[in-house]
Amino acid sequence: MRHETSDYVQMALFLSFMAVGLPVNISTLIYMLRRYRHAKSFLLLLHINLNISDILVLGVYVPGLIGWLITLEWKGGALMCKVMRFVDVFVLAIRLDFVLKKQECKCPGKAELTNQ
Image (cartoon, rainbow, N blue to C red):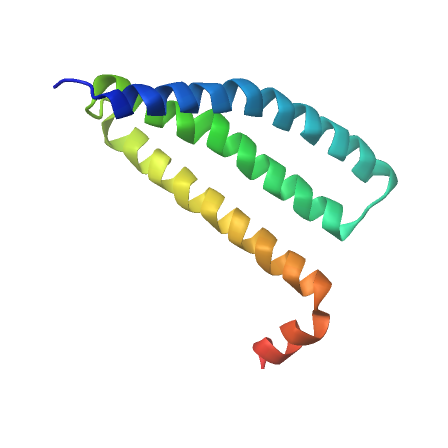
């Protein structure tokens, strides 16, 4: 199989996202964890969860996509395929939880109406 131009563009974008995003997210996580020790805020905890999901995407999911784009076939085996799908769904669930909890912080009355 041959690579198309879009494959190279995707690989370059994914690599640049990883090169910039991983160090920034890791340093931000360290900063937020230090801040959380002194000021235990629920919103800060939500941002920590979002940051962890970003690190999971950039550190686990994106390298798998890059590997798949390089080989154009899955060489990770059945177990790695299941792990990649789990990480994909897990990160989506974390992000969805973040959005819902942040909305609940902004509008607590609306959350009570939807739970009834």
